[in-house]
Image 1 (spheres, helix red, strand yellow):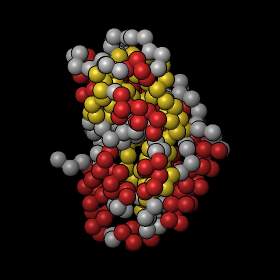
Image 2: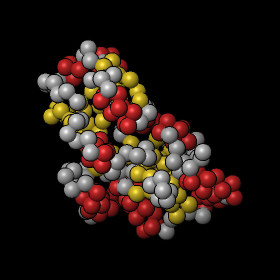
Image 3: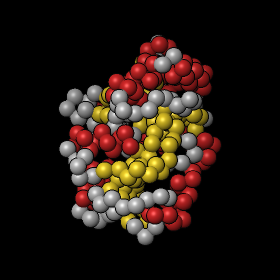
Length: 255
């Protein structure tokens, strides 16, 4: 069944063709919904919350723009962004290949990537993952260096949800799960699983998190204004305050 925000988006796009929608100041956003605490959808009332939502909402408010969230699967959201059906993607890492098609904001904050396990093992480098079975999010990237190393050396399955990956880990189908620290710790805490599943001390990567816009956007001037406003919010400390309100233990925004 289509979710509430897809229904809303359908009517908005049906009633307003793309150029008019841009002229009317309606920004259609998407992202990895369920990427805690950055972007979350309350299934009971359809409300979107999270660090990335709040930052973009404030930037739109300051520019007199309206914001609509569309809940697409990650790969579809990326495709829709490139084709202009989505205006901005909330929360993405930079890669060389993506940068050819997407226009990035400046980094808004940092995201630490860790290895989650039920049975801890010694890990001093990525080489210690060789020969072990692991999971990673479907369609996600942890930076060019890790992605290239994983492609050549690791036995990693791309899985649609962290719920499924943690279930596979608990049942012994895998030995580890590669995941963003804040996202996974938020989930484990809400599920009461912090004693059963924990991150290894080894830091896989520290990635900057961005907002992304299409290079084929029909409204590049508006995109530029949003990018500039997002950077202003980072510089004046607003991003740090929003981030801290959701996760007090996470480091401040990107430099």
